[in-house]
Length: 102
View 1 (spheres, rainbow, N blue to C red):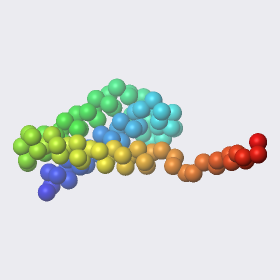
View 2: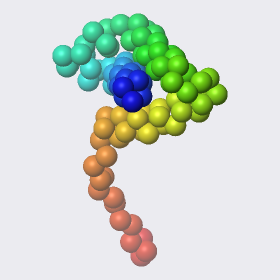
View 3: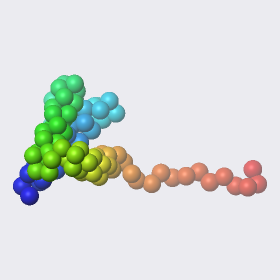
């Protein structure tokens, strides 16, 4: 089970790397302690991709290539969605109500 947890860890690292180096989040990342990730976005995306490939190789070692291909997508989807939900501001926006008389 340690390889599965390592795979999940590397997938979450890659999700955070992709989110910090995106164009939308670069300005916020430059203000934080992780500004190196925003200064070198191509290197961050490259290493994030390597983390996904490494986690795929861990899963392929455990389960074989066909199962690893499916399990990498099954593991990546909720982790990436969770990171997106953490990074985005999901507070409710006030709506302007239109009256039917106008």
